[in-house]
Image (cartoon, rainbow, N blue to C red; front, side):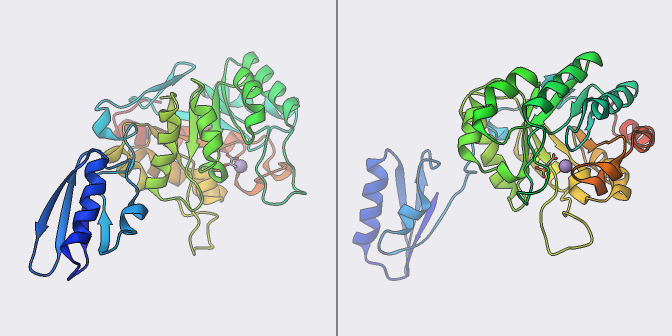
Length: 337
Ligand code: PEP
Ligand code: MN
């Protein structure tokens, strides 16, 4: 950490802040310039509050030199984390393909989806039982009944499942019925939820918040790891920008950047990332080409009748074409499906 004192700040103001740092077990190293003093601080800076230090008299600014996260950082673990679900090793040379409807709507709907995706070799199915909807009058999901359908269908087709958790009170039931828990974009900074899923050993799919920075995404993951769960898969699902032509702006540079910063695997959601059916295949290809460990796509037997996200779900036939068309990119990246 570097502390820059204001020009002309008296020496005793620098002394006061150095005493505080020493009391906290850190080693301040002052550099007295002609105009101002700069203090380099040696020691664990993550426990220090920048706001607190900046409140000292005479301090102009305080700058971190290391990232505020630790456990998710590449510097704390050199090898890539692999999260294994139903034989799919997310974070390995195998591209993880996750598919399924936005919402679980009926047993018949789930059966159709599961049957079609399992024929394509998909091993992980998505489906929301609890839906985070912008308006309270929109379909909120089938809840417990939806979870039962998800579990039953997955068992029939030997699929693993990922489903979103919105409320801590549903944790035990969802853990019992599903294989992976999704923390959706709207809950990426629901810190109590992050702590609770951190106490389980369940694989977690942590989606980037609509307005979250990459650092905030990594700090959200840090919460889960800090509470004991190392099985986190990050997901870039687009962010809200001024652009109106797409539902979200799919920030694919997140993928290689996260790979520079963290050992956690990262997949891409081109469905919510674009909100537009025609863009899903090209962006899935782009995701694989920029190094994503996998992708998650919404598939519905009859998208126009879907109770949520109708405009962005693929039919099983369209998804089968996508799975075929991405093969050359997977091969070019020296990966397998
Ligand atoms: C979803 O997966 O259906 C969903 C609501 O995703 P997100 O949290 O990324 O909006
Ligand atoms: Mn959706």
